[in-house]
Length: 277
Image 1 (cartoon, helix red, strand yellow):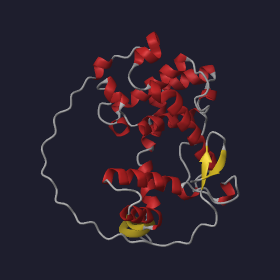
Image 2 (spheres, helix red, strand yellow):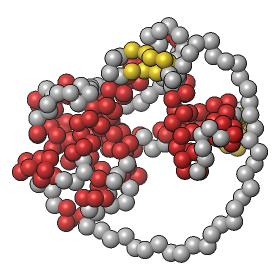
Image 3 (spheres, rainbow, N blue to C red):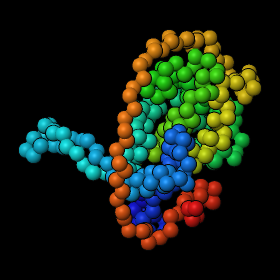
Image 4 (cartoon, rainbow, N blue to C red):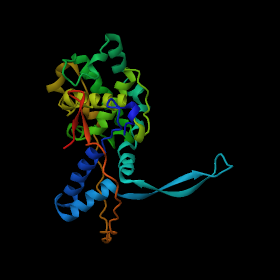
């Protein structure tokens, strides 16, 4: 959510509708529900207007350290946001070490203009190689890219796009001297939102197609990486007993007044708002 003083339109804006619709489509797909069914419609209403009990801790009056358990009522978008940003800081913490060579190359050659150009420019091969090597340097961090992500070329190509993208955004913000942290989700800065959208599109367009392990095709003799050093064969999983099915609790709906304006979606290509359909 971007508050009115920070929004280019002068009105409060958020991308909640886009997030909810996307999450609803994924949820229905994995649950085998039709989005237009009665149950699918009730689920969407719950996502958009429902609340849940969030377990947290609060400080005790008169004590600087002591905290007690408490429960707060929060909208579902709060839960989704918590899940989506969980662990993002792990990429920020290692950016200077993992991308050390890439940072030096970019600054020595003044290549910062490629970081947010939506992938439209033709970046030098040296730039592309060191960015990919920086991503692979996170392989020793199980919380960043999982267990042994470089065990094979195929396994590296299957690492979730969001993990590589977040690592790229972390180093791009570092090189552009942007602060590593963000404002809270319900008072986000418009400049942070638009810059992240540009960095996301730049990574997806230029770098992600090259991050599939096919080094000879993409980089030729400019990149030499010893995949055999990272070979790993995981142990087989133990058989587990099936858990009994739990009867779902009834869905509770909370109604809110309709918003005064139509939902607006930011178009990163044209740098303007368009109506969300």
